[in-house]
Image 1 (cartoon, one colour):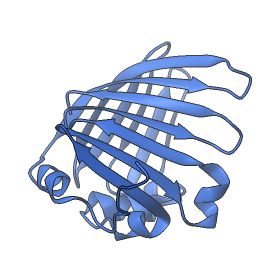
Image 2 (cartoon, one colour):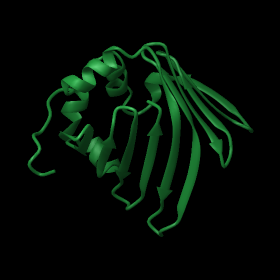
Image 3 (cartoon, rainbow, N blue to C red):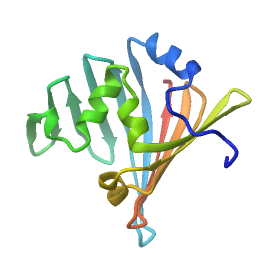
Length: 167
């Protein structure tokens, strides 16, 4: 992937898909591996209606729900439910802008390599800015527009992988 160009904007194929999407929903499997080598697996569903709301629901091994509107979010599990302003979340401004189709903050924050081959895409993103460099080492994504995998590595050697289906 070293020969791939650095991106400064969303590739046209993906931009068209995002612009034509009113709702995205599917399932995920998340595998988190600790520095000691222990792997934890969670499963669930997600749904995104750009500019309206986002739901991330874990169904296994226990139920939790993260639900966000353009202004607030609610995190709930069997013991509690917490509501906060979305702007209280770290990195919110970048996420908010991307939700509105402005990806410039993302490309300012990450160095992104991108390649398409045989109907599949490959992305490698590494943080450019200090606040992200402290908490994230790299993010890789690959797949098709309907089925893809995202992997992240952190400075403490923790890693996780998310498999998205039915995008």
